[in-house]
Amino acid sequence: MDYQVLRNIVDAELQRFETISEEEWSYKISPEKWSKKEILGHLCDSALTNIRRFVVTQYKENDTIVYDQDFWVKAQNYQNIPVSEVISLWKSLNFQIVHTVGNIPDEALKRTCDTTKAVPQTFTLEYIIQDYIDHLQYHLKAI
Image (cartoon, helix red, strand yellow):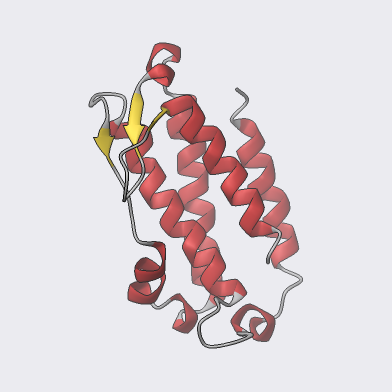
């Protein structure tokens, strides 16, 4: 698996983010929908949670690591943080993921982690890493 793909995504998106105004970042279609800034905040939360998964799963098989995405976005109040700070956090977290994932031994990629809230369901670390990148790309399309 080529984890430099993530670095390339981040570099490309940082350039695109410069073309989006603060007003566009903050605009909400409705009170219950996330703004572009909140979507990026959600991606920061996802990165934080997944860094923990990527590290813990290497030494603790089948640990349960989940999070409530709506609560995290609301609790961190991304809507009222300058977008430059959210972008900086997102960049730093994803570059840390590149470093962390690049340091995972191949044999650890088969270890498993439980990522679900309701019904326990385990996934390999390799799957979780790819799913993280897929999830990131999915949400970046909404920005």
